Image (cartoon, rainbow, N blue to C red; front, top):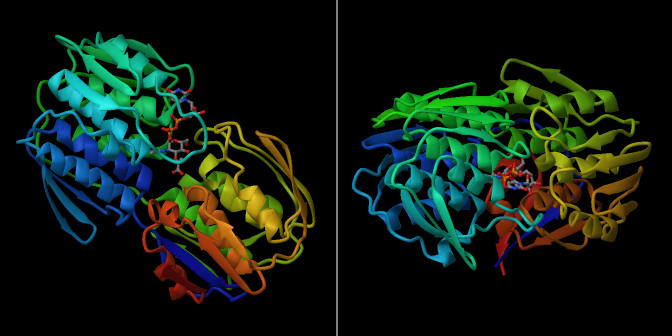
Amino acid sequence: MKQMKIEGRNILRGTIKISGAKNSAVALVPASLLCDEKVVIDNVPNISDIEALNEIMIYLGAKIKRDGDLMEIDASGIENKEIPENISRKLRASYYFMSALLGKYKRVSMYFPGGCNIGARPIDQTLKGFKALGATVIEEGNKYTVFADKLVGSHVYLDMPSVGATINTMLAAVRAEGETIIENAAREPEIVNVATFLNNMGAKITGAGTSEIRIIGVERLGSCFTEVIPDRIEAGTYVIAGALMGDNLRIENIIPEHIENLLFKLKEMGIKMTIGRDYVCVSRTDNIKPINIKTLGYPGFPTDLQQPITTLLLTCNGESLIEETIWENRFQNVEYLNKMGANITLIDNRRIKIKGPTKLKGCEVKATDLRAGACMILAGLIAEGTTIITDVGHILRGYEKIVEKLQGVGAKIVLEEI
Ligand code: EPU
């Protein structure tokens, strides 16, 4: 077990370089199985979710070489085996193996995926996509067996723009016969990254990044190179850290357009920032205004920054409101922020009211999930005294070298084995 210890109230100065996006990389690795040759992916973050995926890749027989951020995957000799529940349960993205194996072998057997406990996280839309392509789905408890003689392109309408279902349908359709159209597709930049990767292999996908994606199936996919886009959620988290404790803190290697939703809200609050082509410089600003936030699919305000920005709203002059429309269990951080001295009221499981400004005092808190953990680190950075965060395994799943990156700009934070 690991914990983090933070001495609060240290100014953050210098530069933080953003890593490759977790939510892209966790789809690109399973997607590489669709290729009949070697692929090379650059800017792969060094996080435990990628280690968990590599464990599955190696179990299936893929050959993986890692050299820093560069990853070479040769999945040409893999076997289509059932992935044991204890490894698929480690993360949500394990269900990208379902679609990649189905797309390649027309048959897959797998268990319900894991992931942060932030809601029920059903997979009905993914299964809807598989069925639309002509697959039969057999559910036995937690286990899904999906098969087809052949997958045939079709018109799929997603009931909601689900990131997972959009990527899964793309992966299953890319080697199907004929054309698949995904309507009401999710528009996240990570989906564009996955489509570009597949197109580099020889797939024919258009419209990724819009709500209508068209895929013309191809028979084989060949060797390619691709790069993981910068992690917009990691970038957003550090921009918020700069708004809390920064003195011209520079967050670089980012695509500012991908975090426009956050930058607009920070401007509304009165935060001082300079936005460049691939960086943002941000400083702590006094007397910031309260705001209202409603989480939505991209390009709306991202649910994954909802918990991190809550810490910033504690410092506003007045009352802010957050409405979480994506996940029904994403306010587990509230109990711990209030333990530190915040004044947050849970209106219901979708809305909270935050009264600011409040001063936080360090104490022992828990990272209940990945982004709640990021929220607690931000709280520790502004609190008086020492904050101890337990269950930090959740944080290490998604933020590469978070302790080293924060230490590098002046934070007093350490990771301890307990
Ligand atoms: N939904 C369904 N049925 C489905 C799929 C989704 O009802 O078949 C619902 C979900 O319950 C949720 C909404 O649709 O209410 C959106 O879910 P989505 O499928 O878009 O989420 P996801 O693919 O499971 C990814 C990220 C999450 C991020 C969401 C939303 C990955 C591995 N995870 O999850 O990231 O919150 O999109 O942007 O890409 C995180 O990084 O901390 C994280 C949780």
